[in-house]
Amino acid sequence: QVQLQESGPGLVKPSQTLSLTCSVSDGSISTGDYYWSWIRQPPGKGLEWIGYIYYFSGNTDYHPSLQSRVTISVDTSEIQFSLKLTSVTAADTAVYYCARGRYYYETSGFYYDSWGQGTLVTVSS
Amino acid sequence: AIQMTQSPSSLSASVGDRVTITCRASHDIGNNLGWYQQKPGKAPLVLIYAAVSLQSGVPSRFSGSGSGTDFTLTISSLQPEDFATYYCLQDYNYPLTFGGGTKVEI
Image (cartoon, rainbow over all chains, first blue to last red; front, top):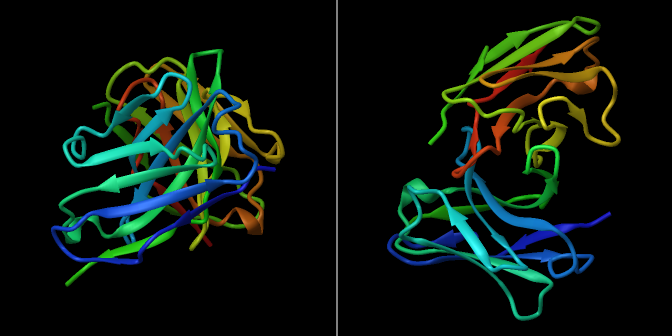
């Protein structure tokens, strides 16, 4: 059973860059047909999809509201992938989850079959 | 972006009750819909994908139906461990979008 684990600072100052890493226990970043994603949840609120990276093509897609500030990449180690969000404000305070999207052929979609435990990032001076 | 409207936002139920949660998409999304369960302080857990497919290991009391714009998650007999918040997620196009959530309470 794959395990995902987020890591990174829990406190970021306004206008700075939020950087998180997700470690994937079974090395499936480079071996499987998965969409490696980030999803966040502001305290007491619902879930918001941030974006994904597809390892084999390097394709990424981001939420339009974050597109100018966000980058998702796979580390050269190929056992981690990362999130960078620049120019953060208090509105970026949330629990950030990394997740593995498993492709299904029936409708060419994917669903999230594995998640990290989540990490709270607070934006405050 | 496709808007996902989930209802109700909360409901009260008892153990053994049949519970139905609905999700409506602002555009036709075919069968590209999943249902997720989230308990406090925990990551979401997938229950249903492709609108009707039960994820491996998920109890058979959970079922999904619908296509196009209208979808339903049904819990046939609510168990104590089912008290949680449920979200739908469309994976038809980007950005993926979640419903607002349904909190199932005692």
